[in-house]
Image 1: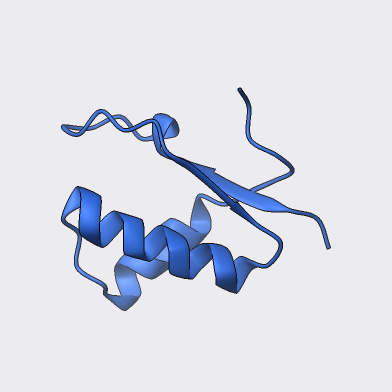
Image 2: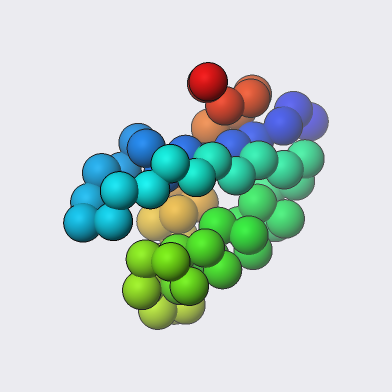
Length: 64
């Protein structure tokens, strides 16, 4: 299993965010991404938000 990541720069919005999160497991990445989405972007921790975040995971390492 390869490393996975999610990059806020891929989702421009009101909050100009340059955070990228990466992890070795999907579950670890999901937990970190949900915490970030809730605390920084004001999302609610719901099943729907978790599923949308999971859909945005990419394989490999983030771009610079």
